[in-house]
Length: 269
Image (cartoon, rainbow, N blue to C red):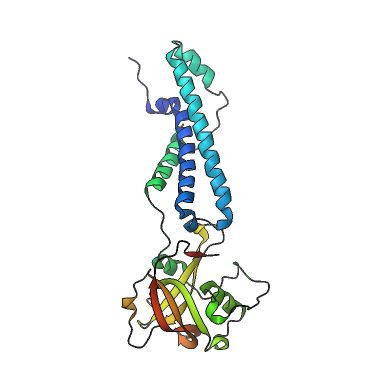
């Protein structure tokens, strides 16, 4: 009786597994593009490249599966299976870290998980872990020149952070109107009369996303418990300077806090 070990079986079907992995990743990229989930994974500048890669992978995977199907059909009509198999195997096999077909299995599993699970935006807990700030890191998005052409109430959250990065003196903005949108963070180091309004900024993909934001002083008598963490708000008010954690900071003195749905594209760039 002939017994086939697992490595031999994997080697026998390795070409099929390779083709399935390629096809699955192409379908996954195309699904993210169709459903709009690329917005929370990569920068819009790479949407076209991602779409092209997904279409190319689907084409390559489909062609490979078709070729393998044709070969299998030929095998059914030829009894000398070992001869045919010997002509199919490439003698110049490349060296891989994993046993034959294991890398394709892992890629297929990851693609299957991606097709089943819907990606989500980062949470306020992720923002706290990565370190939320009201200034841009020195290695990211440093403007060579800054021109303030928007009215204060027309600036987005990222524009407020950029202008603070250019001129960090908070008193320069006292009394200016503000209207921004973002998600709520409850920093444990601040009292319950304050929240942070924040957005994630990406330069390439979600892996390099970092949070920026501004502290918000709630209206008199309000407690941040009525504004759950990760909920989205549109906040109107004016800028004031307050001392928080021993530092003078620019703070939004809110006059209106309106819940809004999470935007289709939650990131700034």
